[in-house]
Length: 226
Image (tube, rainbow, N blue to C red; front, side):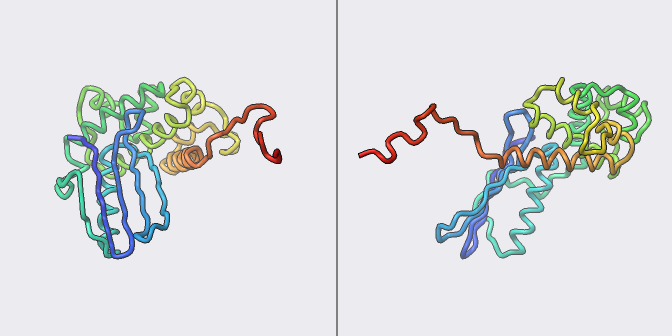
């Protein structure tokens, strides 16, 4: 069962927290925070996850890294991580269902779905009928890239599928006027290029400070007065 996860670590000098939680768009986001025991501020990071299984993989990678660094896991909201298998039939079936929703949201036709996944149309039809994705590492890697692209577009366009569809099909100066969807269809590297660019845009969006609007002629009201 997909459920939020919270893990806390401590060392003699520092603390670290990782939270895998649903976001406002129905997906999952990994939030990490760290700091020093002496009160020095650390950093808080938000990283959208292509899917729950990807979040579990990221959490397990953090667990190993913290253990190597000498941190002690001192609290957890979920202890069943060791037996979690992101490549199990159940999780591959869940990923297939989520992927079909992505294709519908982005209005990707059946023949292009097959090209993006590097499978035949029959395999895509099977997933549409409820079959799990094949247990193939290259296929699952393509699925993760497609899910990450969709998630980034969802953030950038605030869930407006029509804007996301238009962006995918419009020449982009960042890609030498190539159409992003054409790059995605061309190769695995094309998928990686589009994913990397979009995730960079999402990072910039979260790091951008909020705009502050001051009333006219009153931004420094009272300054210099007696």
